[in-house]
Length: 109
Image (cartoon, rainbow, N blue to C red; front, side, top):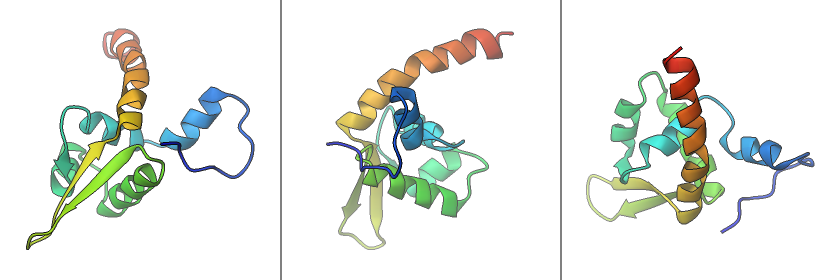
C-alpha cells in the first residue's frame, strides 16, 4: 500500500519520508506500536505529554498514509486497536538505525 500523495514536489527520499513522519510524536507513536497492537488509552499513557487531539490527528494521518491500521471491534464500550501495517513495520526497521545513533551519540554523550 502506498502513502497518499502530498502536495508539492519532494526533493529527495529523506524529504518524502519526513513528510510522512515529521513532527515530535509520529515516530514515537510508531515505536510504541512496534511490539504489539495498542488501544488509544494505552498509547496515550505510553507517550506522556501528548494531547488526545494530537494523538487522534496523528493516528488518522498515519492510517491515511497506510502506516497504521485501525481495527474497531463491535463491542460496547467501543474497543479500537492500532497496529503497524507491513509498510509501518518497514518504516520502523528504517528508523531503528536512527534510534541506535541517538543512543550512541546523544544518550551516552
